[in-house]
Length: 229
Image (cartoon, rainbow, N blue to C red; front, side):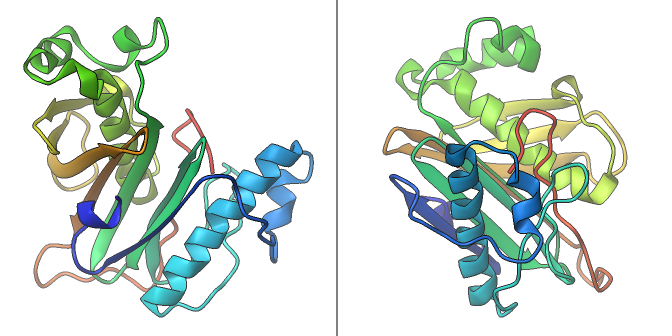
């Protein structure tokens, strides 16, 4: 699912079903030392995806520990993102010399919980969803798109980005996100989404402008304040 949403140069690995046993290496275990077994298993499984993706990128199979803010710490020269929900986990990585950031998110293909919709989208955004098939749960798709946008934003800017700071318009399989906060260097991001296997998956990337290259290292976050990996 995920690879079809991402451009060339971004490597994605995903897995479905129950978590297969996976080791925690280096400093990874510290983040889930007091976690319940199911949380530890999910944490380890999504990092197994990360290592597979990093290896395909040519970056080896290093540990992907958590920063103090509980965000994943990628090796120098790599940007990426993690996501997981029940029965699914995924990682996407890219070279920091080419990409400012990568954002991915997965959600169950189901309505948002009661009371959440008005917190994450404006009345205008909700009105725009009326043209989409309700069987696709477009409110959930829009929520996921904002989560993906945040994963591009935070590693680059390191400040909070509220749901109200991003205005998303969905098309069938695509979305456009308008940023009302400065800092990323652009005010619009373009992403893609798909559904299947009981999931909605969204992805968005930001490449460096032509002729511009990043420095040697970049750490990636998955700490939107809403969920962590």
